[in-house]
Image (cartoon, rainbow, N blue to C red):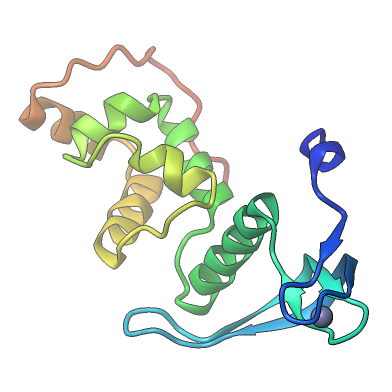
Length: 160
Ligand SMILES: [Zn+2]
């Protein structure tokens, strides 16, 4: 990862003024919220104070941490993973923007789901599972939304 090189690897502790160094926490518990289950994420990179063991997350580390949390919350809720969502969309052969129009979703929805930045709703998850099983249903939806589809005939179907 090229961003790694720019990432801060040490600094001063805001609590005790000691020096912090790059550390990898094997297991990090994230408590449940109103809508999200408690999860444990693994191998979290952070800065840790040598003296008081306080932990800090730099902006890039926060991003990586949040992606891990979302991945774990999806798994805990038995929702499609980021990769599975991308696979469903790519099997349909439709780009993100067009599929958002067909499904009446906000712009950037697929970008955010496929990059692990946000979690799809239960209903969206169900619709994506239906489209994985019955890809031709996307034609009917596109027609209802007035979106023209130029999918080549004989596009590959989902294997087995
Ligand atoms: Zn400290």
